[in-house]
Image 1: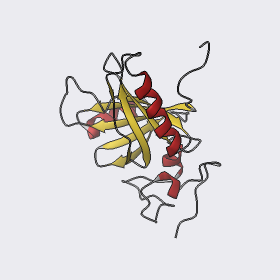
Image 2: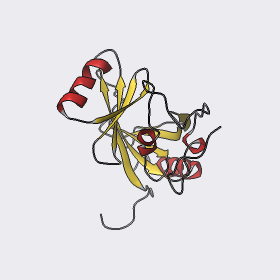
Image 3: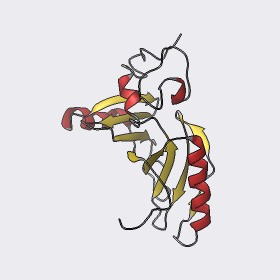
Length: 173
């Protein structure tokens, strides 16, 4: 890349894909590809292999055409304020770059974020995360199938569990 970019993202942290049946798809991910898995919700799980970059898998229950919001690429910024600033910058250049949609910001799956849709209907997410991206989910030592060891505090937002500067787990209860 030459020149300056409009958004100041820190890293690419995750991609996401949709599957029809999480249980069936998990067999391929674990048994064939040997991926490490953390179940993050009744219809979601994260995958990784020797990397901080994760694949977030979302069960849709059906094959979908058209809107594939669950299939997206995620880029981190450091703070909620940077998420808001990134959204404002994209709104300012939306027409110039053929951006079809810039969604509202929201809190969800432990982060503050927004999505935008490019001219080719690809979905992109800008979100706040600690330095290691979604790695903290794996470092907690459990998931929805194996209880989170440090997360006995009913935390809903990653900043309640992880120090954003050191990426170390904070003490709970």
